[in-house]
Structure formats: C-alpha cells, structure tokens
Image 1 (cartoon, rainbow, N blue to C red):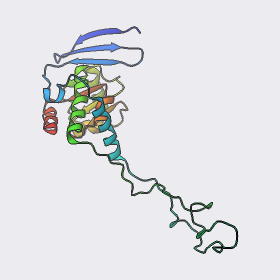
Image 2: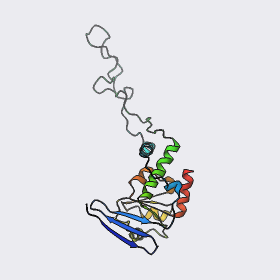
Image 3: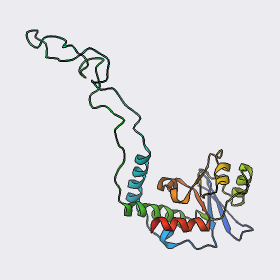
Image 4: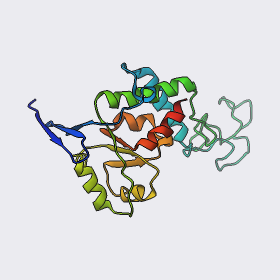
Length: 224
C-alpha cells in the first residue's frame, strides 16, 4: 500500500512526521523532552498483562443492572397444583416452579452479581507502563501543554492542527484543565482524562497521547 511521508518543523522546535495511509492517518512526534524510563522504558510488550488489566478495568465499571424474577418473585398461587399421589403425573408443589410456563427463572442473573476480577497491582502497573512504552516506541507521545484560558472548541482544534493531530481517529489528552475538558466534549475523536485516571484500554486504542511535563510527574507517582 502506497504511503506518503511528509516532514515539517513547527515553531515549537518539534519535528512532526505525517504518515498518510489509505486506511487511517498516523502522526509521529519528536519531543525535546526526554520521557522518563520508569514510564516509557519498556522495549517489549506484555500482552497478557495488558489483556488481564483491560478485563479488570471493564469489570470494575460494569453494573449488574440486568435481572430476572425467581420463583419467589413471580406472580402466582402457592397452592399445590394436584395431589402428591394417584394422578400418574410427576409430583409438583407450586405453579411458580421454573418447570412451568410462567414460572420463575432458575439461577437467573441478579443485581447482586459482581463482575470484578482480581489482578495483582504489579501486573496492572506492568500493563500501564507497557501501554505507555508502546506509544513512546511508535513516537506517538507528544509532550505539550494544552491548557486553555477559555472554553473554545475552535481553539482546541487549531492547537491540534498545529501538530497535525486533529484528523487522527483517537486522540488522548492527559490533563486536569477544566477548560480543556469542556472544549473537547463535542469532538468525537478527542478524549481528555486526568493523568491519574488513565486506563490501559484508552492507551491501547490511542493514536496519539498528549501530555504536559508537570502531568508526567503525576503519572510517575502512580507507578512508584
């Protein structure tokens, strides 16, 4: 598949390479800031740790809202349908039994179900660092301060255009700036998350991670 590679130097002295593919655009960044090895230093991907952690994250966010009625909850009489012996039929004690049409559900889902899974802290940290390192190895981490003085989606898009990132399918910005969060609400391809709340799944599907230097320090504290 043919690819076109362009190289442009921005006013911020950061070299941005644009790789245009027929399937999806890709952008690589050259940062003047040296990424800390404790977060971005892994050379190999730990796919099993990443997989287990994503299941852990999904399960912890899942609510058991689906439910069916048991034999104690369905509407119906409590009278014995027929006598115990002498009819030739199988014995039955209630019309609400799961064996009857209209009866309760046996072993159905309830709101008491817990979808949490157990994953060790070391494994979760390994998955987090592995996902960050994968982005860094592919040069998809941009160290830049995207804090905004006012709420403006137009201004945010202009900032992304500066780095040729506005057309990417998934842009992940780690920031605590409230104006930035509100400015990105109606951009379908941009997600703003606190540095301390980044999910491994978000890092895996991100085409670019944008983060400020002071927010990297907060992420270092997370893995210590």
